[in-house]
Image (cartoon, rainbow over all chains, first blue to last red):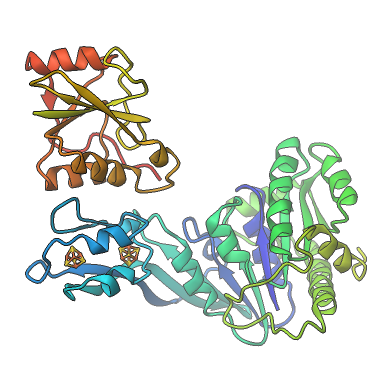
Length: 320
Length: 119
Ligand code: SF4
Ligand code: SF4
């Protein structure tokens, strides 16, 4: 079971929800920090030691002695990562998408692939939570390969919670694709609603069931709730606007540890989320496809016309 | 000698566009004859990444000896210097003003990229 926790923008409490949900899960669980540009789950789940793994991607290297400046590689590369403007090529490793095409088309066999480091993956264990965090190197602009590497650590059985990057662009889609359900964290404000709307469209386009966690209930208005009701998206949980939560956060202490009375709230969320995933299984049953696997399985929208009806199907089985 | 000047217009009186990779057009100007042609860069305006590199390839194929623009990023600069194209940066408002300054020898040649690449 893979559950992605996402939000249309940063700072809504996405990581807080992911970390506390993991700690309150009640069974061994994996927490994957896919916010590789700004990972922070490890700030709340502090382990004494972490296992480190360097992640690389293949990029071309040109043997200038063999190259005759024919320009084939340059014409092939749509990303302009290898450029031969009438000369022998220049390689822009930071633009390379590691497709391997230039090496194949080079008639002189002048291109070999070499490893370029893009970041590290740290794995640690804290209180039944196996935390796998991707940390993108400074200056590396492309995060999807590292996110895919983090997701490749998802065990075949068991539960994985996935802390997605904020926003609605490429890295987020890389992170949430293949999940069984998506939890969208938002705040009950006009800004929160705006970003939630974009996130709902994105998840709907991917055809994944989703639910909403409203954080800091008490500030703002009820428009987020009205939106969810109108779009048949279950509000899975509400977290009150509690000053003590902000204090615990600023000290890097998970809510369920600083304020044990909130443990039940996250337990409940765990149950709602499990029900949402079960609903998905129910909905997808019979299409003969295994949707799980290496964490990067392509998902076809259940109803390509309206992602929403997928959620409706899911909602039928969710009571909150 | 041929120059490529970044512009949003179609004549020498048009505004000089300060961006290199994302300039709408290049005015390719022949210093000896005073004749010019236009090179469209529109497809590049939409490029998420690599616009500078692509623009540099473009002007290199056009066979220019120098580029006059507002700012030039690191990747574009690398491509341009690899093929021996000089880069002059200026904040003069029009193509004509930049050309006059070039002819008077008052434009300074960029030693390296003066802006970060766009992501
Ligand atoms: S591997 Fe693909 S993306 Fe990278 S330089 Fe070669 S052709 Fe371009
Ligand atoms: S395809 Fe090979 S030989 Fe041709 S320019 Fe590229 S590296 Fe050189």
